[in-house]
Length: 340
Image 1 (tube, helix red, strand yellow):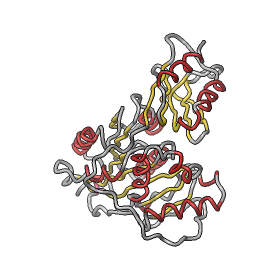
Image 2 (image 1 turned 180 degrees about the vertical axis):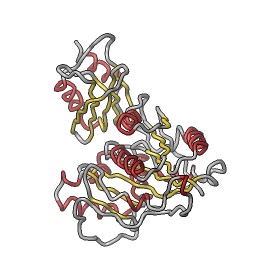
Image 3 (image 1 turned 120 degrees about the vertical axis):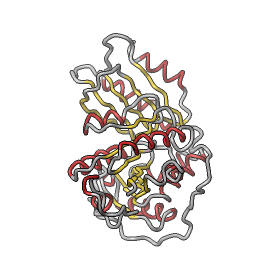
C-alpha cells in the first residue's frame, strides 16, 4: 500500500504550521507514525523546531530556498529517505511562496510514485489580508500566479483568522476562491481548527494494514459558519504540470543575529522595528532574548501582528525577516541600532 501524502500550502503567516501541529496530534491519537518535510525560505529552522518542541516529531528540514523550484531535487531526496522509514502518512509543509502544483508533480517521479500517493492538498488562507494580496504583491507577477495556484490546487481551502473580519469580507473571499477553484471544500475558521477526520480516515498504522488509501477528503465542519454559497465562476485556473519557472521573483529572506554575549532586546522596540518596515515586510519569526523574560521567546510577526511564546530553544538568538525587495544593508543597520 502506498503512503498517503498530504500537502499543506498557503501564503506567509496564514497558519500552516498550526494546522500541521493539529494533524500531528491527531495522528498520535490514531496511533499513526507520521513523516514530516518542512521547507523554510530562510537559512534558519524556525517552524521545524516549533514542531519538534511541541510534538517530538522528527522533521526533514529543507532550508534556504523553495522546494517547488530552487530546492526541488532536495525534496525528492528527502522523500526517498522518509519512504525508507515507512511512515503511515507524510505531511509536506511548503513555504508561503511555493506552488503546490509543482510538488504534486514531484510525487509522480519514478523514484516515488510506486511508494506514495497524493491524498490531498490543503491550502490555508489569511482572511485578514486575502483580498488585498493581489494588489499589494502585484509587482511580483510570478508570486501572484503562485498564490492563484495555491487556491486552484487546494482540495480543502481553510480561510483562517475568520474571526478577525466581517461577514461581508468572508463572502468576498469565498467569491475569490471560487474564481480559481469551483470544486474545493472551503472551511471558515480560526487557529486553523477544522474537522481532521476526512483527511485521515482510512489511514491506519502499519501493524493494521487493510484499507486502501483514499485520494481526497469529503466533508468538513467549520468552527465559524460559512457564508452563503456564491455563484461559481467558470474561469478556474489549471496550473501547468510542466512549468518550472520560479514561484516568485521579489521575495527574499534576511537573517538577523544578536551580538555576541548576553544581548537582549526590549519587546516594544522589536515590535516597532517590524512596524517600521512597512508593507515590504510580509513575515518575521525567530527565537530572541527579551528584557524581563527569563525564557527564550519565539516571536512571530504576520499580518501586522506580533505573537510571543515561551520556548526552550537552546541556540543563539536570531530573527528571520521575509518580504518584498528587502534592503538587507538597511535592515542590518536598523537592527544593530536596537542594541546601541
